[in-house]
Image 1 (cartoon, chains in turn purple, yellow):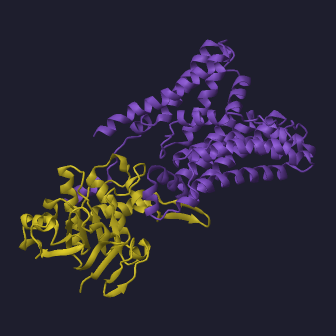
Image 2 (cartoon, one colour):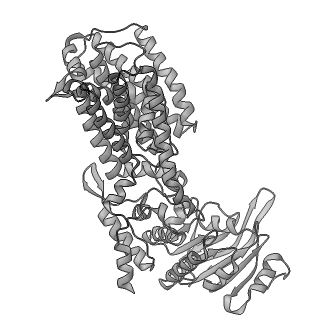
Image 3 (cartoon, helix red, strand yellow):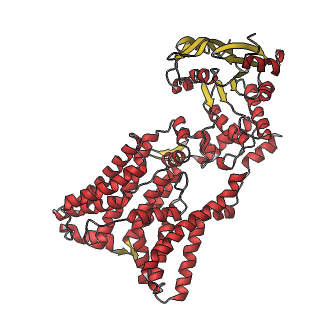
Length: 332
Length: 246
């Protein structure tokens, strides 16, 4: 009897292959791979080093922010202010460096401004209990407005003594890989490890699934929420610094409506807007798929007006697919 | 000696008297069925034992010591644990992580601490084996039966070394087979010398596992009898008021 019970308790339920197949991100990954193969076959221009370099660099910015958005969405929230936070971060960096300070000082100031945005978001959501949608919608407007006030709505394209270093950071490459892509890989690995291997990561999943239960077990839910929104703005801030370096100039419309691409990437990658589910891998693949679609339309000579139709369809398709797969579970 | 003893507990909410001089004793290794109609005062009494409410009058004695429970954490520190009706589990986490939620085991040095999944799975496996429940520590709670979910919720309380366990409607809204699983869990807890208060509407379940049944009606305790010396008909009469009191 006891031996039988031991066996039952130790038994593994899922094989590796069934586990992989059950991941939404796997299917999106498959779609992205197929799209790449088809493009390689149909065009001479897709699988060139230069094009692949551009594609990966282009999606790196969205993907970095999507890492933060994934964490927020897993926790059951949403952050609409990331595009404006990116703009504010880039603007603070530009102003500080334009005034003659170095890259390090500028970066610290930019990330501090971003973290402040996240702290305000988190405080209002966790302690004043205003819905995340409303708070971050307000911040979307507010942060960009602050960026306009700080710069007097002018473009800044001179970055003082460390200008070359900044341009290298955002626009350069190391061993043939664009620097923002390297930053993405590092940040994705860190985020993935944090989500899986720290108490913080476990708690993020817990509050996204059952906030009441999390409270009862003594998890510091409010402080946790503040840290989640700060994490999201930090990612937007980092993307802002890199994008400023890539573009070589900062305007106040930088990152406009970027939050929509970021949320799209996160959702396509399998994050559940109801909270409790999402993966780093999914977010990166989601961002990659959007960029591959965009790139393929250009290469195939299809009007760029179709871009939105394809991306929109993919968002709905990805979620519909997940629903169809999940429904049989609800019935038993 | 009784592990838990309530004496003359009353609770007023403004002009409403939810509890009126309730006294109750509970011994280790005993299962007490607490019954009563909606609004009879069951949940108020449970919330007082759990530290959610302070009684207006009366004393609570745990393990021979009079205690004041101001907050739920005070009750928890005294060895009182609750299994909530909705179980308060996170569907998207594994059984072991749910058991350890809020007191996860970690390993590492300084600020670099990582979750010790191996240790948590092993310890949760032991707890499930002690409960004689076929629950796999690595499985997601989402995919579990009602009985297995109960096992996870109860394993949480075993981890905390609870002496007194309050179970709020553990057999409501689950299938017949799962009810049997849950009743077995309660018998197992009794065998391990825990004191269990089972709050339930389901007469057959209470009669199946309780040693003693207490009935509340309109804030008063109207009966407190060994299960063997009463009948479902009598208890029904006491709950509805057809029988005044015993």
